Amino acid sequence: MSRLFGYFSDHAGPVADALRLAGLATALDTVARPLAIGLGFSHGTQILLKRRPGVADGDVDLAGMAKDVRTNALVVHARGPVGPTWALDDTPPFRYGPWVYAGSEGGATMPAGALEAARRALPDSLAHNVRGRTESELFFHLVLSHLRDAGVPPNAWTAPPSKVLGAVRSALTHWRTLAREAGEPKPTTLVALLSNGQTFYALSSGAPLYFAGVKRVRGDLLRADAHEAGGFVFLGGIAPPDENSWGVVETGSAVWFDDTLRINRAGIEP
Image 1 (tube, rainbow, N blue to C red):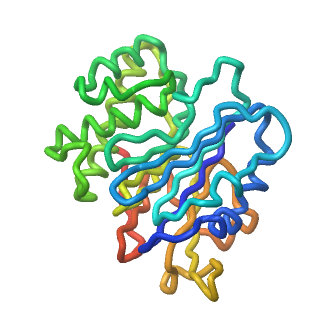
Image 2 (image 1 turned 45 degrees about the vertical axis):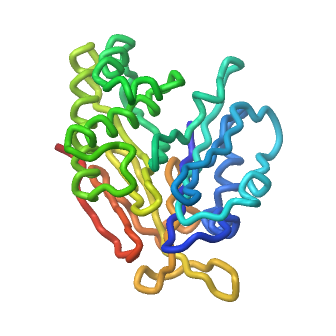
């Protein structure tokens, strides 16, 4: 069981209101303990992380974790229940260069042989950055590997959206092929958020992902229609409180944004 949240705007600012608007604290109440929670966000040309691998009881101090965070791109992931050996390196989000990623790859359980094959497919520069044991971290690096194959260095500050979406598409095909070859017939589902601070991608394949516009009024963030939005919030793993007023990232597709904050859609299925 996991919960996924994101925020993207055309300028950096405090994120506490965005967390409140998405109802994330309420969403976390439904996650069994102990849980692991992490925040990843752009800070200039860096990606910073705040992660807690094991919260045993009571409320998660999400407001405390995000209190000093000012950013235009934020990804939050919570997963539970986690076992006593759950480590910091296994706690999303994950980062590489300017990229931050958190996702839930489900539906199929990747056999150990398929995971090892995916790891072997990575160039050394990416393989050495895989520090944990999760499928999510490995899939993220597979996307970056396919981005590299498309001629875009994974540590480059800018990346054409067409190349990024192509890398997601080809990595998803690669992942599923490895699973089938190892004897797993069920297709992998994907709900994920990916950003380099300049663009933000909400990815869905086989599971729901929601987004809504927000605007800043008198220092507060308020829900907004897309045409007047100054940013967007994203929610995955649970339906929003008022589902009818949220947009949906259709399964098999991506919704992505740059600093114009226009809603762009593209397919990610092969």
